[in-house]
Image 1 (spheres, rainbow over the protein chains, first blue to last red):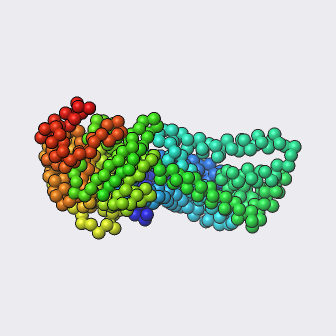
Image 2 (image 1 turned 135 degrees about the horizontal axis):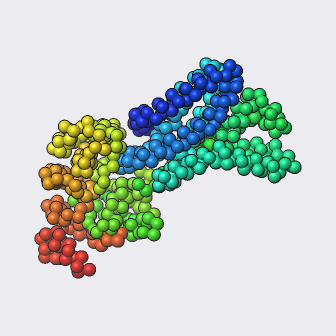
Image 3 (image 1 turned 90 degrees about the vertical axis):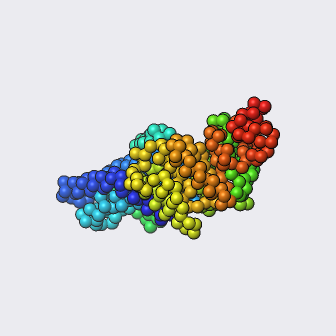
Length: 255
Length: 235
């Protein structure tokens, strides 16, 4: 497995897009922190970068990469290798390089400017977004044979998780505004990794009061030890389940 | 050595393989022939585990190949259209394959690399190679690890006469070492000197599997091309 990861990583390094991505993140992070004197405000702005831009790059880049590695995959499938090893190595290579780019571009500056638990939660959320959306990308690309269609599906999925889902939740909230919606809201937010991360960061920023009574319920749940444990577990599930499904699909795929 | 049992594979409505059963033994050289789209490549890919059959199973040395992967260390495969990572150089492709298959204690056989003169162009990128040079790389890779089984899908298509002859000599040489060789080709005259058995496929079905002597006896023709033509006409 190490051998294959090595080749995937070498390939990604040569690609230079990951390098460009790192520098872009670094420039954005430094820019945001230098514009605002208040580092907490900087974290707020960074949160939007982390929760919208990171999923987008992770999902699109990974999808395109898998399609472009078709030859590599075809060549190696006929070799004495487990298909699992091959697929997981591609996942590991992608997730690893994108995570390193994130740590270098966002993680280290955040620790320098805002090395608090808030900054830490932000970095952890970004890392989770990276590995979650890489997994979703793998699932999207193994399910669709056509490259253009696969990339389209990936963009749609990103759109769904960052925008459409929130719109639907808002609609539900308004429709059921006469009922106590606080508990269902916790469940609903668990079903979207982007929302879940956003809530975790907002609660750390101590502006949950802005969310009214729901905010208080959130604080009660997500602020508690079990709440944090459950959220981390759910995020982990979000990373594992799509990847596992894609692995099952890849094992029986005809090449 | 390789036994396929009632293998069926469908792609949508198309039946690429229809209840195919084949037995291939050591030191046989088998020609797999049939019209375009008769399922030859699908059968080969099923043996390699690149295509998963809908029903039936394939065994390699009495072990089911499903969920198995070690057996591929003993197969050298030359695809019909060799597709390689475009930005890698020839040397990088060879090194990567050696890296991946290094656990096998087998000898590295670089004879074809030398005979094809690939040594001089090792630093060329795969995307700049002509179709024929790609075929040379594919052939060299198939023989590189001295495998017990060689599966060659249209090996001479796109090769110039000199390279084609080198490859043929190599196949004969390996055949004499007692290896199982599976070849598909449309140029039947080329197979004359090589093969000991013929498998004929049509529309995904196995039409016949006979030794060359049997075919010659049945048809009274010495040349494979004429004999096969006669059999097809008779049907």
